[in-house]
Length: 148
Image (cartoon, rainbow, N blue to C red; front, side):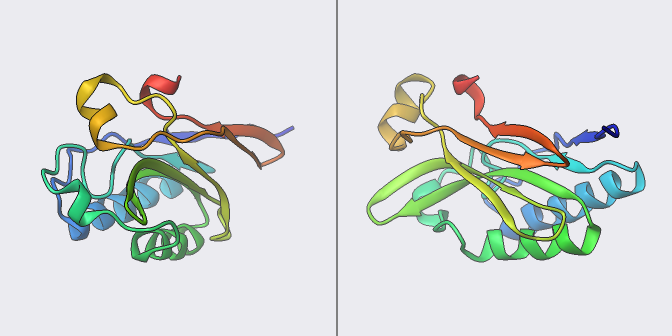
């Protein structure tokens, strides 16, 4: 089995700016591509930023504009990626992550199961299932922060 190079991207928080988060994703995928990485991993709540004061207002559903843009960027770069985002599901707000293949396909979606601290517990509805998927012939999983 060939090696799988992973690029871990830890940028400053985009602080509520979807444009900044999308630029961060694009730049991170370009760095990963140049380094020969097969996958780029981005932080929890890349969209719209972990400390964005308006998470509930800025959240998007799974399959929303952020995911659509990320799928196109991953496909264009030929690099798989995983990123976190604030997910709106009806009245619920979830701390979620999506894995996208190098072909732009959605490999997995995941909702953080164990909120960290009282603030997260009050803000986010916890998920109830783990998400595994195959990438480059390997089994992988999405986990967020305290779930590890």
